[in-house]
Amino acid sequence: MIIKKFQANTETEAIILAKEELGKDAIVMNIKTISPKGLYKLFRKPLVEVTAAIDDNISYKNDKLTTPKKQTFPDVIYDEPAASIQPEVEHSKESSAIEEKLNNLQNLLEKQIVDKDTIKEDTKKKGKTASKNLACIQLIYNQLILNEVDEKYANQIISEIEGTLKKDSSMDNILSSIYQKIVLKLGQPTTINLKGNTPKYVFFIGPTGVGKTTTIAKIASKFKVEEKAKVAFLTSDTYRIAAVEQLRTYANILGIPLKVVYNIDEMKQSRKEYSDFDIVFVDTAGRSHRNKNQRDDIESLMKAIPENEREIYLVLSATTKYRDLVNITEAYSEMVGYNLIFTKLDETSSVGNLFNIRMLTNAPLSYATFGQDVPDDIDRIDPQSIAKQLLRGQ
Image (cartoon, rainbow, N blue to C red; front, side):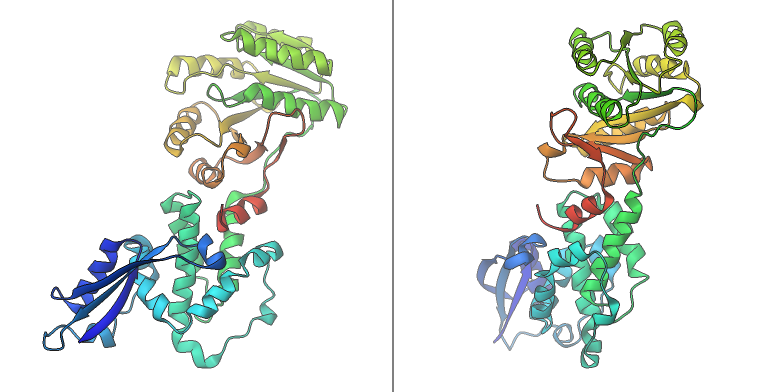
């Protein structure tokens, strides 16, 4: 009797692997769950191990056991990521070495760049390097998906990295390359700065409930206190009395003038009133992105200010579902170009959507908020920090 073990994400996948290798007459003898150990658990969910057997007298394709079909990374990533490589990884003599490197992941990410001169490969293992690299890439891919990076963007990162790797690349080099690729794709944040002689009008747009008004107060506080800038508030959010009163409260505390504008003419008039101010923050109504007429109203107000005097920031909540974020950003992209602010990072354990929306819109990232305290709970988005969070566990 021939007995073999097969591992996959689910019991069904493991049984399919057994049937494919041993044939349809294979008998399942035992099923158990295997939990990953140490930092390995950051990359993989528990696996199901199936022990299957077949009688020696029953014929099957023995060449599957002795000469497994050579696999390439695209097959793994796009078809059956875990099931297609897991038996090979678990039975490989290199698995302990991979686990050891995974256990050093957090230290590696803190260093960011691996010293290539310290990496040495055993030349006797060159024949096994491809499968080890494949397993490493697969684990990193799985981690990106676990952190809610869209599959197409995770595949894009892996595809771009795969073509640059040497056959004998170590796990450290692979991980470092992917980390740096993510940082590059996130780009450097674009934040508000005071340049030129004319007032800069900064418009904040976005759906209701994402925290636009509080975000404005946080940013305005920093300019008022830290840069000693002459700051003013405008609001066109006349649909919610509470929103106007909230901004008025902040204006009184900071000693900042506040004006409510109802139409294009009043917006144009504000340019004369605030001609000697450094920066004017404009709070717009949180309108439905599905309502084109409402979006047109906001766009008309913004166009009352010359393009070279205005900046636009789309404020999104990090807790919003990805599908809704896609619809929101696409709707607003028809209006104007914008920079991205993400709020409520303290209310989610995943930052995958920040990366997804950055990739989808190609709009620059700018600020992130992580609490209600004004002005403390805001900072510019840090690409290195986001990349680290995408590559490690929750």
